[in-house]
Amino acid sequence: MISRRAILTHGAASIVVLGSGITACGPGLGQAREPWSQAGTGYDDVRLDALSYAILAPSPHNRQPWLVQLDGDDGLTVYADLSRLLPETDPPNRQIVIGLGAFLEMLRQAAAQMGYVAETSPFPEGEPEPLLDQRPVARVTFVPSGEVVRDPLFAQALSRRTIRTPFDQKKPMPVSALEQIGSALTAQMTGFDYALDMERLDALKRICREGWAIEIGTSRTHKESTALTRIGAAEINENPDGISLSGPFIETMKTVGVLTRENMNDPQSRAFRETQVFYDKAINTAMAFGWLTTADNTRRSQLQAGADWLRLHLAATEAGVAMQPLSQALQEFPEMAEKYAELHALLQVDAPARIQGLFRFGYASAPEPAPRWPMQTRLIKD
Ligand SMILES: Cc1cc2nc3c(=O)[nH]c(=O)nc-3n(C[C@H](O)[C@H](O)[C@H](O)COP(=O)(O)O)c2cc1C
Image 1 (tube, rainbow, N blue to C red):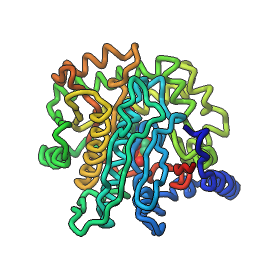
Image 2: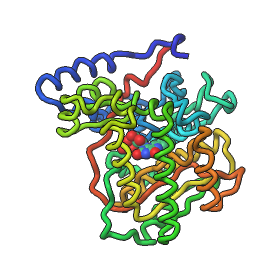
Image 3: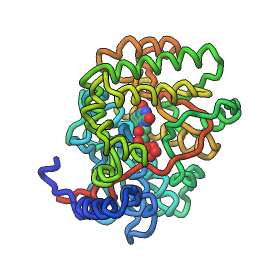
């Protein structure tokens, strides 16, 4: 697909140049975070205005797997960027489609805010199975409408964060907050449920820890993640995607050679142990778990799960609740099959229904926004 169309590289080139400039006068992530302050600043085209928000959607490993072609004066086509898949941790591309669903929902909400209905046809040339291919993920037409309903969740678009730090152990999650978050779902195709009782919390924490141990203990899945890890500001500004490690401690560890991608792959290294402990600590502080289910696992259901994933996250942000997906036990590589089955049995979700997302909830302060590629770098032209 990409060979047929040249990506507009202006944004990519400028980010590299400016990224080096920032590093020269001290590390900072200003450049990588700029798309958050550029959203909605006025592009003279409602599609670009809406896209400037859509690129802020969550995606697995922050892959930002979307490519967009503008069609005529009022349309656009969304494609999956096939160079941004996660073949080891996401063999059927399910998580990538969830990210694309979140992107389309953000696009829809932004369009509504500007008085347009984003009329969307998902997979207009058929659902790609067993893997994503070059066919479009969605065609969208922007139709002006005096009656379009603005989505109150849109107010949270710029504040939403994936929060990976430990959650406050003194602040229990009230049922009312979880009910409020769950009420954000619009579709009949997806369901949301949650657990607050000690017994299930303990069981879910154990499954998440064990799933995490399997992911980082399986060389090829762990290597997929370390290859996408950006260590320090210079690397992040150059490639504002993937897993970002930043801050003074990280820069020091990098400078003294303790933190390298090679070390992270070595189970005997400090970098590897730190990676395991960091995530385990986060899991252990979950004050509640929530999960998103679909009745089947078609591409359309995955896309809808992505829309509702974003809606849950925006509703959590509105309620002041921190949310982090814990996706390991849901992944479809063979070594994870036992954890996948255990999780579905515990939560009584029977095939063909499946859990599309598992999240921990609690309270914690929000970090700075995650890096993004500038919108222009996600546009393709003939
Ligand atoms: C399908 C999917 C799976 C994800 N799984 C995880 C996960 O297992 N652990 C995690 O910390 N974040 C996970 N994330 C969150 C992304 O890493 C996050 O959206 C991305 O880094 C961008 O950060 P932001 O959400 O703060 O904008 C997932 C996101 C999606 C859409």
